[in-house]
Image (cartoon, rainbow, N blue to C red; front, side, top):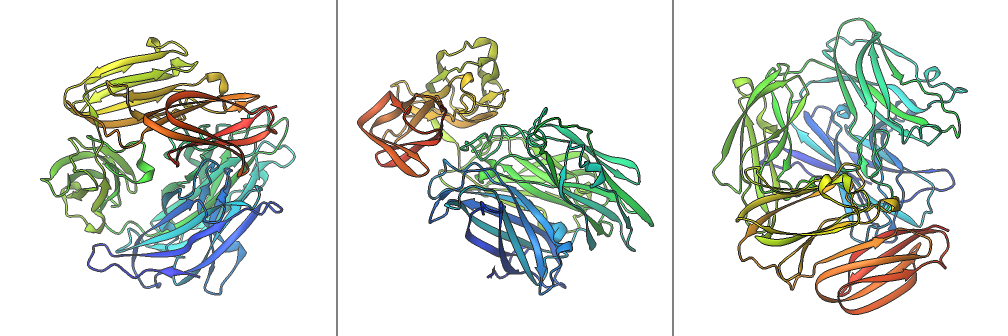
Length: 629
């Protein structure tokens, strides 16, 4: 089954979408540990010029079952072109690490994107795309999967000549009975005629948990790539998970991992090597390691070599992304934002990019201009912060960025020089309000900072100013204007995290002078959370719109737990406690404004428990508990 849209006309560049999987319900096969979902799609003809291909992957709650729970490693493959199938030529084009989904409700979904232009030589005509879902959880929970291939037409940056597999497999790490270096062997190849760039594309994640270091999932280790016995990359395989835009999740999402995080479509490593004639060799070397107990670590590696011509144009720049302002979910930790637009540009020309003119503005207002200077090699990208205030109206707004004059020259192709994002303006808040912080047992990890549009600090609470398990009420008296408030956590586990009951429980909330709740920060926020707002004298929040804040502690439960809550107006509260979707307890509370509600769970079996709170019939909180005997 396939879905293929027609080319959008009247736009530069033109594009189309090939949707191979449209909300396909995927579940695990607990008997074998994997289940495949193949679908066909019709991609551009071989003689059509393709500039770029972006894979958009969306996971959501299925219509017919609850959301899956666990962080499994999934893969997207090209399995067949037309009737041709050869297992040795199967290509992994993307790698998805699923989130902990137990707290996601009906209607939830989240999307990720990754550039897969390196496979444009294969994504032609009829192609069978397979999504392989791994794991062993019951097939009564799952995901709704959508794979959307965005095809952008235009002249290629460089022409692909061939693609070959370098390494593909799960290589044991630290096992002296099956040494990794005996399996992960060097690969020899010969440069093709006309080749200008030899590109290595690597997907690499670590899994398993041995002793003494917790490899490979929870140990930092390095990898080196060698070209003709010369090291061309030294890479520490470790990823900070505390800033994941998909948060909170129903498991240990904040823990840093071996080059991946739960709820993450992995970006591959891209290494470009200038081509030279003759035979060459590529090799991978891993940091030496000997496991001593519970030996199970594996390095999941899939790497390709793509022969390209030289870049076809000397001066060619592209706008890759508008990070701020942007209401897309991958950018939710930085938006809405009142100032400091942020973008990513990429040099696609053979000449180093040393300058570019950036024009930007909102809603058709008068444009601003920024002259960027620097030094970007071919295919290098750079995040740039642009000066100025971001203005907008209530509701949806547009922000447009246009690049021009790379290195003072005309751009080779202007089809990727402009980009538009959609955004909403920050909240309006009273200029006088109360900041209420309850610290946990590790206040040395936390800090609060408020800055205005001129980047002046107007309020701060530093770690040395905070005591453990204490409540601070500070009154802010601000001038009218735009502000950014930041809560940071240097330990990466927020003000509260269910798997670490020893850190206690904290929260951060804003109230007006009538003690009405006007905003709450998520306590389970990893590295922290940001709020931008517009302060206005005399502004009163709309009390008809129900706002609420909840705290559930402890999450690791032996007998008792407590649900603490506050709202901005009285509401009927319903608390539902479930195990595997089955309702165990249901409690009703009338006209609740605030309070602490104890629950005895000592009679329940060991395992996962979910506590959900509804206000006036609407789900406002869903927390994961673990019954620990």
